[in-house]
Length: 230
Image 1: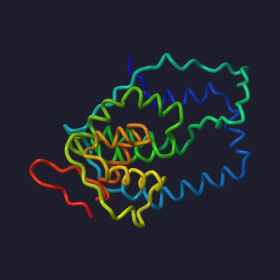
Image 2: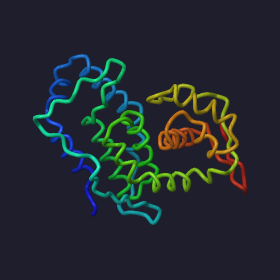
Image 3: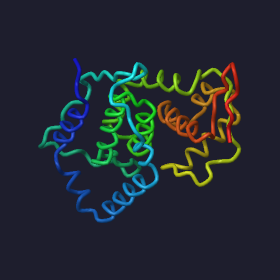
C-alpha cells in the first residue's frame, strides 16, 4: 500500500497533540534561533535550488515508493509522556522548516531533478536526522537513495581523491562534520572505506560526500580519467 508521506507526517503531528508545539511557540529564545537558522539557510543555500528545472521526469529519476508504517503506534491524547532522565536529550521535533525541506525533496524527485533533490535531502539530514519522521522515510527508501548516490558519485570501490584545502569560506550547516569527513577520507582508499569509518550514519555520510563532491573537494577516480580536485 502506498502512502503520501507528507500526509503521514501531518497525521503524526496531529496525534502527538499540541503541547510540544505550544511550548516551542512560547519559548522566545527558540523562536529567535529558529528564525535565524531559516534566514541563514535561505541566504547561503537556497540559491542552488533556483536554477531552471525540468518540467517532466527524466529516465534517470527514481520513484520513491512509500509504504504505510504499522510500527509507530498513535499516542493517545490523554497519555502524558514519562519525564526523561537527566542525561537523556529531548527528542527532536519535526518542524515546519523540516516539512518544507521534505516537500522540496519529493517535488524535485518528482520532476526528475535528482541532483537538486539530493541537495535538499542533505540539508534535511543535517537539521532533522534525529526526528522519527525522517528516520522512517530513510528506513523505507534508503537502498534506493544509496543506489542513486552511487550512480551520481561513481562506484564506491573506485579510488578516492580528497582535497587538502579544507572547506574554505563555503557554508556548511555543520562544518565540523565536513572537516571530519575530509580528514578521514584522506586515509581511505575508496568510498566504501569512508562510509565504514565515518562516525555518521551511511545516509548522513553520503549526503555530505555528495556536497563535498559538488564543491570539488572530493572525487572518485574513474577508470578512464581522474577527476581534478581543487
